[in-house]
Amino acid sequence: MNMKNRREKISLRLFTNEEDMWYQKGFKELELKDFYQIVHLRLETLVVEQTRIYNDLDAIDLRAIHLFHQDEEGRVDAYARIFETGATIHFGRVAVAKDSRG
Image (cartoon, rainbow, N blue to C red; front, side, top):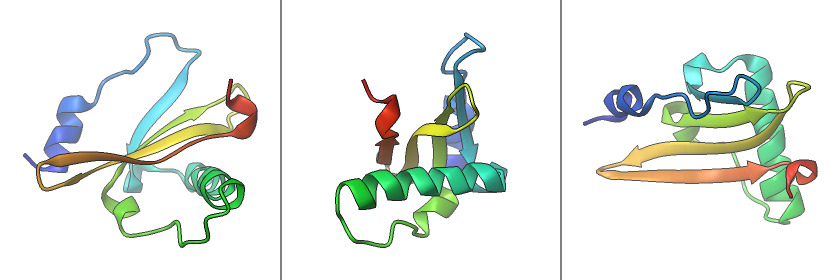
């Protein structure tokens, strides 16, 4: 089963409370503002905070499911990408904004 078919099967509402703003989107479904905020969070958390110098963007972003949370102000404050390699599902680039951790 390919990732698109799996996405359809695992596509479910993570929370029933409308106040919890969790989203899962493919790359083409992301709005430019969402993608910008996701990249900003990833760079701030995974590169700057962890002082790991590497190119965060790669071709996996194009085929991954992007799972993210927006706070009350609409700011992306939590993120993970989900992708498939063969029969294995990977969770990567997991990041939570510093002021949202607790």
